[in-house]
Amino acid sequence: MALPEVLVHDLQSAGYYPQLTQGILADSLFDEPVLAHFVHIDTHVDIESIHRHVTAFVLTETRLLLAHVDDDPNAAPGSKPRAVTSSEDIELERLGTVMVGRTFADPAAFIPGDKPVEVSLTMSWGASRRIEAFPETCGDPDCAADHGYGGSIFSEDVMLRVSAEAEGQAAVDRIGEFAGKLRAAVFQARLRSRR
Image (tube, rainbow, N blue to C red):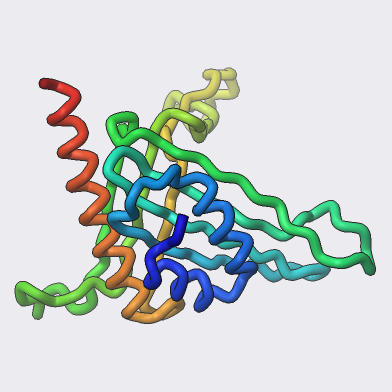
């Protein structure tokens, strides 16, 4: 399947194994047309290495497709680089949360049409959960009793944050547009499933 030119351009611009990512997407789309997409490159630098990761988010009429390409952490030192890939598709009705957060500069001077300087997109469909635990206390500073633990469970399969300061305003605009199309598609899918 041929991918839309703008998606191919964005994969090429990300610069991290674009042909590999294109191949994964073409194999996973099953000839469904692409309604919207967002390509996110992430680089982590630590003392010993640089780790790169690209995720392509692709929206179709029926699902959200995620294609990931990572550096292989188990590649032998001095050997040719290796990449690890994975892809996942989520039916739009299964997306339980599509939360969009926006940060605006100078909110006191906000006028309709002002663009956010940061957009975060959180999606969940029940594939993974995050637990935050903490020791409980009774409020008595002299109490030495064990009050057990409390905490919260969060369903958060993917959390993406794009900032104008880090990735540029154009990237913030693109994720904002993608998030809007995704939310509308999920809303329509839920309406269809209730009929």
